[in-house]
Length: 77
Image (cartoon, rainbow, N blue to C red; front, top):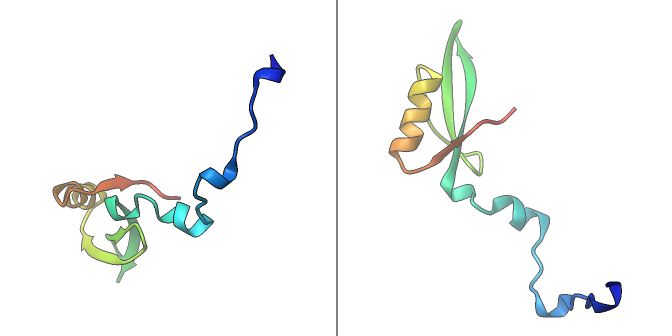
């Protein structure tokens, strides 16, 4: 069976850098991070590239805002 396997010609396929791979889909994603402001917890909303887009009073509100703007919310740890 192994004699039927052909080697992959990598010259026929474009390569992608690790940075380009990490950026794939970033324009469709947003994430939230908790932040403490004077003892109160807020949730900052960030684009996939890390740009802050807004702030919400709760995680649920942040996720709703993300979805309302046609983005996919993701959890990051």
